[in-house]
Length: 637
View 1 (cartoon, rainbow, N blue to C red):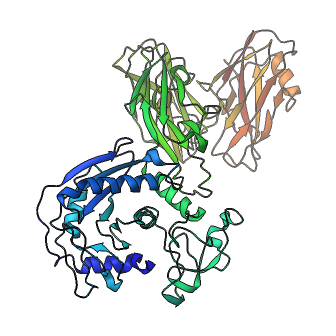
View 2 (cartoon, rainbow, N blue to C red):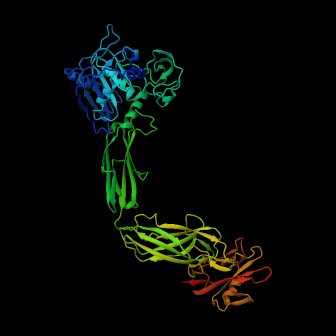
């Protein structure tokens, strides 16, 4: 047979041209038979074989032709390795006559058949193809198949075959080789490798994987040096200018095996359709798992053992180390409450495939797992508001916080804390605005908290964010620990010209009282706030006393330092800017702030007592220009 009969483009063009004019075959009811069933059609590769030119009494002949073809197909690689991936169905509709049309004969011969098969399709004598494609498509659709892979066996002894929408073959002695070649086109999307009838190819690079314009065969370089793969000139109907992977292949000559390049493409396309994971347990894709239970997940697959299937598991997208068996046990106590994803994959590591960038040789199955805990509460902040939006330094503000517990368990006790920050997100180093304590909040209940605060005196004219943070230390066991906060914005404005002293320390509120242990030592940061003072000509001095704040020391007619001097005051004045009293004498910065540090070592020799700090401003024109309020420092055990 001249292999021009298998030129798909010619056959398809002619078949389309005659589609509307073909004579209709007898409307006899077809018989649909599944001859090979390896699993559900949605998980396997289905082939449908149509009978053309068989009279009713010849149905046994058609059945035998099908069995002969399947026996030969599954003896040839890669079909042999993946035989269990296929389902095969037949549709038999009897024709009035046996055979096919032969318009090339003199006189021409015409037969009354269901699909009107004809030789000489496209002007190629041995290209046998059907013309009543509409009926063929309708009959093929009767079979339980999804892929539309349709073969047609033509009951005619004259050598021939062609492939376009359908892969057609005569049923003579070379039937099996012809059909296997033709499904190389329809299943494997590989091109013909024979080199006639044309001379020299001058076109662009072909899309088919097994022919190329490259004399080195770069397209299949991964196969070079194995199984006879190199680059051989003459392919795709051209003697020159196109190259094939192997000297000979079934896509070039009947009776040959498929080369590695063709076999690889057929294998990948097959696996891109077949679901190799056969069964999964649990069968449902959504699984509810309650703490503290375990849940076993497992799969079975059809990847041949000789292909060294590799199994892997991923939990929430991360590979689970060491999980390589078909079964995986999930421990609910190791996961957070809520939704999780568990995925298993099976990779076919067959030697037929060396390059698989699309991962067609890997099949996956995913379960959505929801973890719940009857002992867990679920706290959230539905609402967080402020009575003021525009604020100044030292403003009194009241926050209103709504806290809900979605259950199923009660929550308590827990705290709601407030943080002021110029940036997002908040940290524990930001300005602390105190806390509220909730003793208990039943499931499905909501509580509303009123939290009055005084904003810090060091507030600058800029946008600030206030966060209400529920159960920061996770004292309450919750199903979701990530939704326990809410924020609001405050707009800071220039405030009054004040002279104040306050602490600037994390998690300290109110800002005018602090405690340091005389046994363990510790530090605090008294901060002078004088936004209207001249930062280039104003000094500040922080004094210390253990004798109270009233009546204080008059320093000028308008300035009174609110401290009663004592020996601690003398010690402080004598050790300004020492390691203990760091920056207790200094110059205000550009924002009118003076940052000091009181660092008490554990070996100071001081005993427990109540002390106070207060600061005074020293100006260029007058010695004492202002004094601050006192702040408390408790030296505790």
